[in-house]
Image (tube, rainbow, N blue to C red; front, side, top):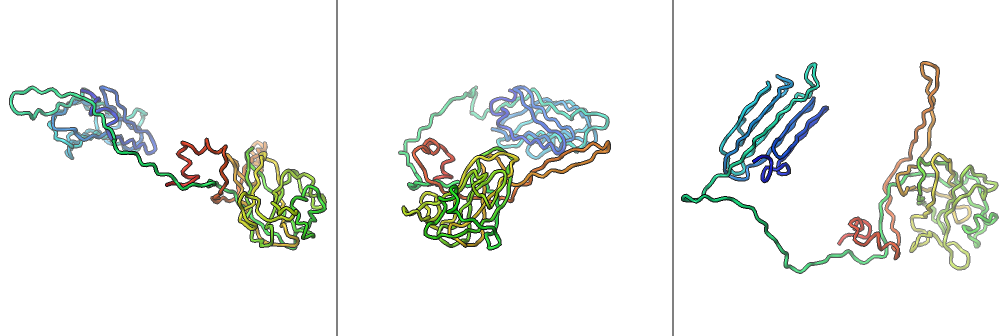
Length: 376
């Protein structure tokens, strides 16, 4: 009786096609309500759980006659199709798997002069299963529980052993070229850059400068890839407040570093496990929204040239690009300042990082770890 058991709300298939308005299907234990207001369709349907008889009452308010319709269908046969206010009762024998459909169809527009939704309420719903037992037996159905147990031995599938994890980030792209038209700096002459020098290869390096901003306070990771083939590839430094080629230690806030061979000679990409000319050099640091930063890119080998591309990734939702300010004059001659942020183009970046003991908690019993360390 009512919308419980086999006919509880969770057993019905429901369509709420609101379109540009509203559509809803609501259940209580005793009523089913379908409604629309300038929507498209509200539908509730269910297959019969067995042979038997269904009966119910319905009340349709006909809020938008001629345009909205309430329909009832049993096994492909339309037994009710009304547009005016209507109340009624219905009873019919049904068979297993027959589909019962309640459908409120809206023309997509609100009633003229009214904001009342078209609404149909189904109540006093009863399903009486058929009795197919032979003879005069009065059988009463009952409910019970079955406990299932899987006795097969478990099989554990694990991904291969690994000491690294792979993550995919959305990187903001910034590209440029180191060429002979760029200003030069002798890194050995400046204490802040001495770690990036090649003592065995004294000389000047070309430096390419690019500005950028970020729209949120965040941690940003800079990964640079280049076609410079000389030993050490490229390195870079970040400046806040300006860059002066005549004083490259002024305003510097961070720089990439290069590993060395024990004799002070740089040998390439400082990422753990990297080889001399591996693709990425990486640096991560916190940056502040609205501040203009300058990215100085150079080579570890004197007089080298080539192209480079940065992929800049944020830990959270920070973007990399530039703020733009425009001014709009209103009819009363007041002026509004409009500030927008234009991010650089983006592309996915795959980063392979070493795993350490402190990463255990982030990997163990974490379903997301399969995308980091691999699937079986």
